[in-house]
Length: 223
Image (cartoon, rainbow, N blue to C red; front, top):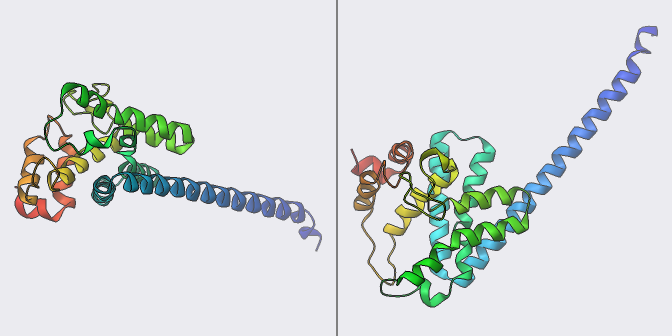
């Protein structure tokens, strides 16, 4: 019995640690759910503003998560990829609809406005703060190119966040396989071949290889 007495304070301390750990986990879960709720709300705003953009974002999400899983990203990288894929076009809310849905080519001034949508998206998410600020940095980089020819910052190679590189490739593939007001959709095999053709210029070659493994159309149509 005497041996148990010194253990009582230790057991009490362990119980306190367990309670604090449980509380922190609950707070982390609540915070994650809050960010998820905000992300879904913003995604709904995108869809209400432009039905095509909303549907397009959902397609980009599905592919981005598959590629992230193929690359074995950790849970937080995977979640950032998912959130960024869902919100990569959120800044287009600030671009006039007549430009977004213009049936013909854009003029230089219109292109300047469109290319600001990633900057505007980062600004919006930074105002939310917390983890979505990190997502905003990925959104900003989602139109950069592997060779440095993208926008808005002209980043190249691994200067571009990995999650942004994933979203960039998934965004391009989904856009190519979707009919828009100014062009018809490409068939999936042709779009997959275009992704491979642009490996090392527009897209990270490592991600294109991951695409080959993650997406059935690429497994069957691309060597």
